Image 1 (cartoon, protein in one colour):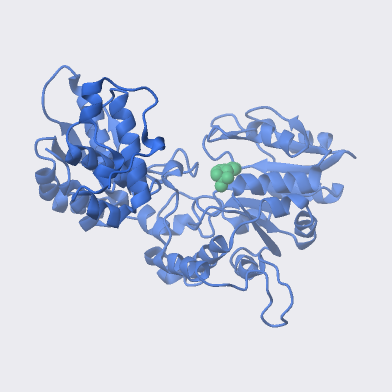
Image 2: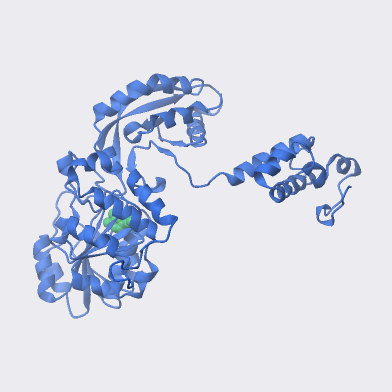
Length: 475
Ligand SMILES: *Cc1c(COP(=O)(O)O)cnc(C)c1O
């Protein structure tokens, strides 16, 4: 029986000949090629996709074609709709901690820990010993204390949230003293002066861009001061005629005046990176020896998930914990599970380099990466033939996320020079190649440099996955 349903009727009647050529939704649904689509996507979704396609035909946006053609378009649309938007990519940009590509990679043990607490109830805020209510920070506080020497620790959504909470809880409607050399912007949306305003604090700038002295702080600290803050100038460096007060002397001054000293460390390494052949970066324990509260990110050098950690003196953290903002900035059980698993790896320093992806990738030697590049070059060249010529070259990687901005790590890369001619020019061909690589099943993200696409192999571990993704490049 043929049904004619009102809701399928077009608003405006198309020309009689065209209308005759457009099949009805019901006819398309009973087409034999529709059966597997109904099985996969469900009848109502397919009907919606057909209606949308018929509307485009009537609007003259696509050629009608036969029933099979329409259903093929519907299948493509339904597949696109169902493919995940957030997905894995190969980060071959040379920036190990790439904020836009999700920063630190988690070890498998952390991913397993996250999965375990996701699909079952957990003791997130439940003390198994007493059966009473627990504190979510208890799951990681002991580890953070042990690894940093802090008396207490709080975890929030990210380091920006950690800074906001510290400022708001310790210095709302009060003054915060900061050196002019440390009023930095980190990644566009985090500017120290703006965060101060949002936290309800009054910024008191001292010193100059290049030189700030202890006496500048001594003169600025007064009865209205709530906090003195130091900011690690993550993504830039001031060189030459510079001065900052001795950190211990500043800490002592704050102690005498009864004002807490907070340090925003940004990256927060828990270990001495120099011992791993990397450029030195202040560790959380070092910062804690000269500050009362230290804030740092969980997904930068620490190598865990997005979160912000506030570590420091017990009495100061107790004040922070009471802030109503703490509740608004708290993190989920998944974050604690991943963070706890990563912190546990630090208990075994001998295996840390192998187990923690961030440290493993940062410490790969150029010779090892170059050998990998030479070994893979023929297979990569074959998959890229018709698209680009592949060469192996030395390059430099960056740590990223504002850590150690002036330091680079020697590495090796594939340099892809696009082939072909045409009016696009070398630059256009290069952008097109980069785009094709971004459209692979597991997108490959490189960087463009002088009409070539550079794929830095420092961060390439899944070689099989990389080659099979490249294999799907269309000719
Ligand atoms: C990265 C950074 C931040 C922001 O940290 P998020 O974890 O991205 O919120 C704040 N301060 C400093 C010094 C940083 O390096």
